[in-house]
Length: 223
Ligand code: 5GP
Image (cartoon, rainbow, N blue to C red):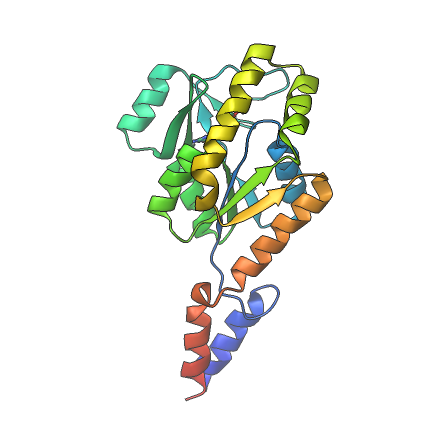
């Protein structure tokens, strides 16, 4: 009947088969130096339905970072105002600066059936887990802590003391948070690690739980 034809049309429109169209919220966390930034660039370049949520932060821009691209760089007052106006999905203090995820932008992307990457710290990730239990949580780690400190040293943006502090923080976070994440990806090679994350997205999209409307439609149209 006409409902069935309509359903077929709708399902065909969805790329890659009978997959229900609804964006996935992908939360990526990992210690600084784990290579999250490079992985994100790769993911965005290889999957056009993925979008990056640009956080607000009170930290100063690093060289090369553009406002509205890497972050929305805001003052402490503006950040407090954003919290007061309930404009942030989550927020946390990391190394003395504030970071938060603007709610409206993420909502807009999800409404457009796009997948959204939140590259946030574990405190923020746990807030998201409470609000969006269906979000997907991926922990990115370097092959070893030695590798991690080497990478941060090479980046040359932090003093030895800051690096020591970051490493000990990374270890204690791992202890408390690792088991709360769904997936662990070791970043030994950016391409390989990123491909694993793309595979995670593909698998998550095939979860029966995310596709119940499709199942119901098929049942409905064949009765
Ligand atoms: P960085 O200053 O090196 O760019 O980021 C420092 C830490 O803040 C990283 O672990 C990064 O994942 C985290 N971060 C960046 N944006 C957000 C955010 O919006 N919310 C939270 N909770 N953490 C964030």
